Amino acid sequence: MYEYIEGNIEAISPTHAVVSVQGMGYKIAISLTTYEQIKSNKSCRLFVDLLFKVENQSPVSMSLFGFADPEEREMFRMLTGVSGVGNNTAMLMLSSLNPGELASAILNGNVGLLKSIKGIGEKTAQRIVLELRDKLGSGRKSSSMHLVSGGNSDQYEQALLALTTLGYARQAAEKALLKVTKELGSEATVEDLLKNSLKIL
Image 1 (spheres, helix red, strand yellow):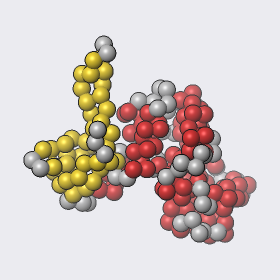
Image 2: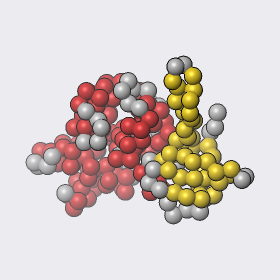
Image 3: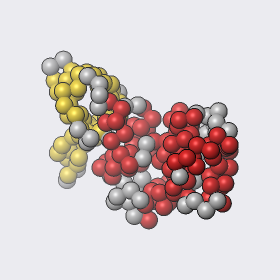
């Protein structure tokens, strides 16, 4: 129904934003990832999903979920399409990891990283990997997801292997590599990734 809502930010918290558009204030649920991107702005554009809560086959309420970019919204839709992952759980996941980090964890089968998110048990984490890995690997990845799982995936995997061989925990190594990859971009060499990751670790 709605593609995006654009207007002045009247109020904002790490979980919600109130956006004023032509005399109407829309209360929109947001993730911490989106909050960090818009918290200092006077206005914003949020790509939204309008979802209905249904009881006894009748809609009883509706909620708006907003995202700073379409890639985060696409990840939200993918996550909520997995059995056992509700809207609030998906938002919690997107508050814990950005879309690129989630995509990388799913593509690499990193159940441990997914389990580290509050409310995600091992079975749910395994189900997310099982159901979304092929979708993310089918070439329909967004640009932000592609950053860590596409253009420089070979360098990323080689750097990850080197770090784990050196004795670093996979989860810590992945977190450092994701940060460095985001900073350096897709042209970073294995040596660049390793050198900068070791500074963090």
